[in-house]
Amino acid sequence: LKNLKMKQLKLAVLALFTLVSVTSTSAQDESNPWVIGFGLNNVDFYGSDDFNTQVKDFLGNTDWNVLPSVSRVSVDRYLTKGFSAQFAGSINKIETTLAKDDTDKLYFAVDAIMKYDVNYLIGETGWFDPYVYLGGGIVSVESTGDTMLNVGLGFNTWFSDNIGLNFQ
Picture 1: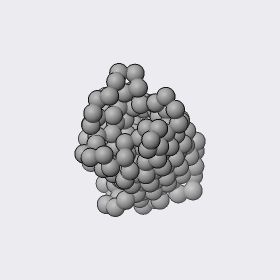
Picture 2: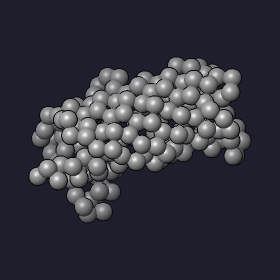
Picture 3: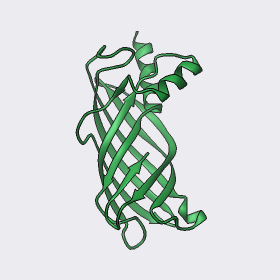
């Protein structure tokens, strides 16, 4: 049972989405190197080894675990030539793994990633800032932790010079 739960935990982290982070400083560059983000996170447990079931689960939202408040905080620092470092922490309450309300556990994660601004390669895109990232983190569910490799894509959308949304 413990191995199954650890496997589910590892698969959940693969499906961990930061849905929305509201940034509170200007778009990141040499002149404005810091970004502070506050947002939501979603933890989705995959309960099957079958690829088709995982895809179906990925596209559905019946087993998402989301706190209805700020549950993620991040700090980004622009480094050089499109690279920035991000440190983030998130917390969540896991209530659904395989069926609605089948568990009640505390989840937290701490991550450190390097991001590369794709605009550095393709040129400025205005309000849309895509990036790729690579890093690592520690995830814990009910004091059972594991280290994770974080690889992915994300983008920022800017509504003004100081306010935007981040999807990662």
